[in-house]
Amino acid sequence: MTSSQAAESDKSLFYFPWMASPQFDLLWYFCPIFVAILATVLLDQFKFLAAGLMMIFIVNAFGVGPMHQGPTWFFYFDKKNLEYWSADKKRFFVYYVGPILVGIVSIALAVLAPWLSLVVTTLWGVQHFVQQNFGMTMLYHNKDGNEALPNRKLLLRSLWTPTIFFNAVFYHRLLVPGPVDNWTIGAFAILGLVALGDVLRYALDMKRQVTTNGVRINAPALMFWLISVIYYVPFILPGQKIETVYLIPGTMHWFQYIGLNLILVKHKYDDQERKHDIPCGAYMLMTALCLGSLLIFLATRGFQQDFSVESLPFRVLMGIFVGLSNIHYYQDAFFWRFREKYQRDSIMPYLMSARSH
Image 1: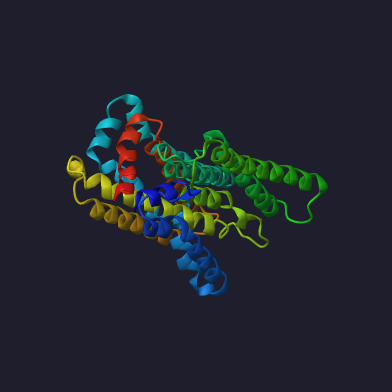
Image 2: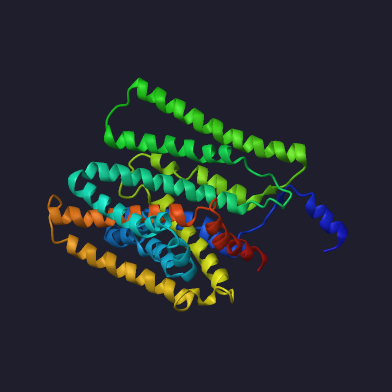
């Protein structure tokens, strides 16, 4: 590229700093929406596919499936992770004791108060989805890229308020079927306007930076933010069921999670200093953990079919499913917390290194 071409390129409004490559990012972070839509259509049109599709997509979407469990438990096989989390009592509790307690409480709730178990897991899952979208939008941005950078609080609001609006409409329709009274319509109108306002404020702030500071727009970051804003739009479509409504956002979520872990595993354990921090090849270990998680799920699910829905064994097994989801949400809240120096230093450089390959 000549110097005049480079100068002209720098003046363009959009630029494309992909997290890994255009092909990788589109495959794992953007195109899954079309995979999820296809699965939704197949599930609706071909009922005999329901069991398989539900296992592949819904189970993984909620964190209980192998595509979530495998990458999460991978952290426990890294020698430096074990050294860090075992260094004092507080970290030891978070890393080892915390997941056990979350699992026990989840099973107890499933047995004693199934409705509360559903509420807790659903709310935690929604928070988990939003936080991943927030984190990935921030990952796409580059402080040294002469680009418009998001205000963190405004970005988070622009993701949360649409989420609250779409979920409120869906769960009201689910829990209070029938005609909607004027007070409820008014409440939804207020929620919708607040959500729209936050989205517009975020977009206008980015536009202001371009106009005032002469910076560029990070196109992949903008696309990812926009997808995250409309993440829950399917929730307000008529006829949605709780068994399938998470299919589109959930599928996008676990594809993105796998993509992040693929980047991390590749660049972290190709590093000669980290290569021997795990007991065997990184991809081999990840595959083994995913397959092991799948076998546990299938075995537990098989046992569950032998009991009635109201029986104690059925509720205990359901508590195990819910517990695995909640444990995943709990673990990720600590393992990917970039404001903590250890997590930032042991993850961020390897995610960033993918940009230079």
